[in-house]
Image 1 (cartoon, rainbow, N blue to C red):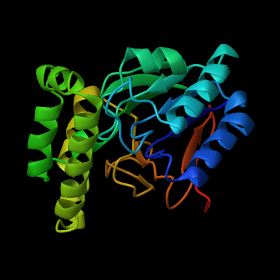
Image 2 (image 1 turned 180 degrees about the horizontal axis):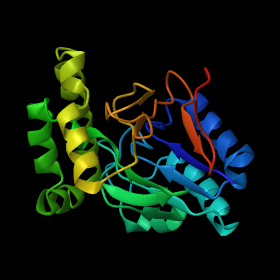
Image 3 (image 1 turned 30 degrees about the horizontal axis):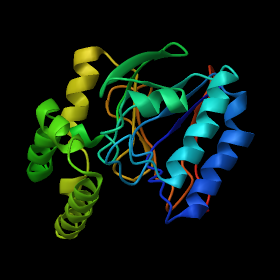
Length: 240
């Protein structure tokens, strides 16, 4: 059997091609898996469980159907969809995991995370992340009117794009010291994350090739899917 890992689909009504690709994956590949792990940014933006787009409804229905067939589906929030709450999790059949979750992946001690928490060189973003992940800030935002939440989200996204266009690739990538710290602290075999949109398989420890950091790609440039079994793993990507 196999477990699948995906991240950074950024699903939205504006990109029906990506939505179709994901629904096709759920219909054709996912039913044969032991588990499906979604490591953040399933949606392009999320401003509340009470503001479901057509895409969010279609995705919830498809995920729920899979879950009812017996497939466990796990979700770690990303930097775009961290406001997903239990209502939508229940509707879609997903089980939320902590920001940094350690699992036994066919005998490999593996940390799963979205990846943004590792990008500590981007100090502006880390300050912003700390603020928006505060429970009181989230409570206040989710109790604003729907119209105001949409407007705030649009303004924040526009400002984020402008800031990111001026940042170097090095600043926006993970900090290797943060990766090494987690491998040492938790005695990890593997780490799997997304966020950077740079699919690759890294060897974080110079003294062994067994330890791996696997970075998932996004679904706008390629359909990045990591499949892991007892004896093998494959980080596949195909043009959409």
